[in-house]
Length: 304
Image 1: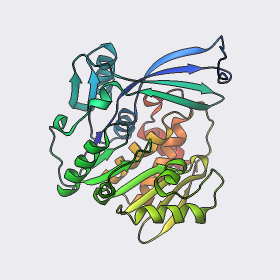
Image 2: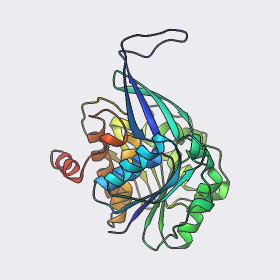
Image 3: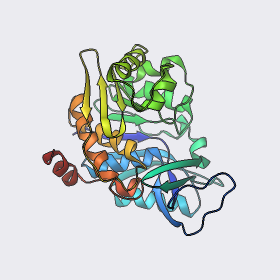
């Protein structure tokens, strides 16, 4: 298995659970609060590591206690943290996550993530590694990293979340784009909603693939994932799940997907594995702590 290298964000998640989310100007009492490791980059690298990939994290944290907690959490999960950069005097990224009835709303204070730059990337990409990035760190850094990784012969995966304006040539350095239907609509201008037909989703994926990536994977929640390549367009069905918290489910998919690519799987095979991993993750509270093990994912696949 080749290595999975994730370049991206690290946050401390402040998770507030309540029966419902408050209306504007309203105060709700009786909520529960939990501090958990998170951030799209951290979530994805933990997902990859827990299903057995050799994984490394490249990113930036602050020099306070939250940064130390995140570094320790990564190390405890066998993630290589030699690529983490500590930014003096800067706060670690923080996300306020409101969870109600299994759904969530998230507000992010980027902190050190906004300071991430290519100068912090001291690891040279290697042939056949899988390099993963998202849009929670500066886009120009992501563009340069994806280009360098592709030139070195690594496979590149870009999670276009949250959607950000980006240079047109960025996608030409990407092997696989992963995004949900909201981000797909933002990236293509195609009007989509949760109930959009498979045909319309495929049309949007094909429009995005024409911009450069070899494959586009649209994650569709309980419906599963649509995989569009030059050879085929196929919906990989989702797995039944008892939902506790959907936070990090998309990141779980990306990390597990990348881990399977590192094992030599096709995008279709990797998407099915990612669906099973995400179905496991939504049954627990939190993002990174909810990422399943390889044994749990195998059990979910076997039960399908």
